[in-house]
Length: 268
Image (cartoon, rainbow, N blue to C red):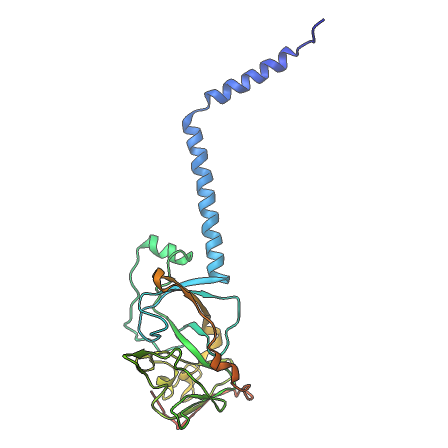
């Protein structure tokens, strides 16, 4: 005798096959679109989280960090590893460093959305990029007998990154000063010292803290992160490390609540 076959189950299977065969192309396309939207939204959310907590691209708008950074370089800033002396950092304008009339390159809604999610570099006009010369408690001064900037008495050998052209390197600084960095702040300078309105140029101004010279010091809370990588143009692809000259800087002294500048009113 042959084996019995469940004819009811066989009919059900046949019905399912026929229903799959009759499934409309429109429903399949709608399902594809829905899945694609889920993937795109997930990718954007992930990109936004990476931008907020891991890394963020920025566009270099000026010459203040030449030759290290050139105008229109695309730089990735990492937010995981804390910065130290000698590192290049991006920070929010502490107040009065940027002209009030400066405007960012205008982007449409799509461009602004892609910028928000970290796909396009940040073009906002309230950020700057400089090199950290002094941290809280450091004494930064210009200059030693050889014209070098000193930190806690140690002269910095900066020729490796200072702007140079035609075999000539810019002076590390020109106006004599001594600055003691207050708690929770940093002292920064651009690599193109003749084209950088950095901490030196705000030593004669009153910042948000409300005392003379306070505008020279950037709050640590304003720091977005440390420059890690040039991603474009491709022929300028490179990573950054802390210059070795900062390795021998003595530890900082006690950080005062208020920074000091001498002589009072010194500038660039």
